[in-house]
Length: 225
Image (tube, rainbow, N blue to C red; front, side):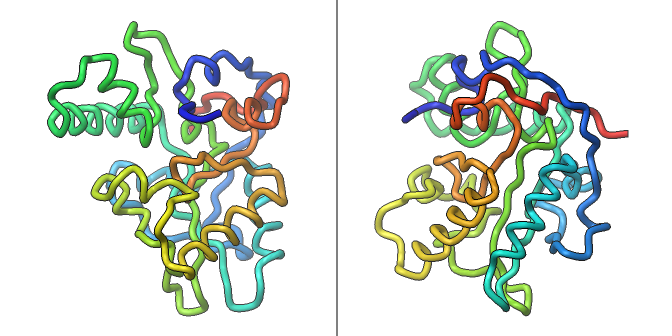
């Protein structure tokens, strides 16, 4: 599965058998913690919403964590319009940083960390965050301080791709331990991790279906409200 992203043709070819499960607001769930709005202000109205089945599994994750350690949502749902804005901005940054790349190479490079809502030919993709299936999460202590993961999620665009990888080499023992704990507990309740991003997990989307050999995803693009 090396090199595949949620925007890869193999992933996007997975059919979606939409189950029509609603989006729910995690700020209304007393069992879970939600962080402040992410670094992009346009995500603020939507970031705490996820599919109901995703919410239920996040509660199961919290129940499996030891006392004093808490799962905290960094970001959940993103509208297709916001996802397009994020991808366009990131693609422009990739082109600026690596001017020798072709258009196709720059597109593929940009999709490593930001899913593309459209392919280069203009046809639609299905970004995980726009389905309500994907969550960016971290572990915090009782004071709300993020445990050591070797980097902050908000720094994803300012650090190397290698540091973002779940299995990044050269981490401190604390960072390795915390990444592995998060990975283990999320997988125990059915989530899959996107290996390029230690913080990104999904349940029910096309990437989840491909990873687990499911015949179809159960969550496709959805509009909130």
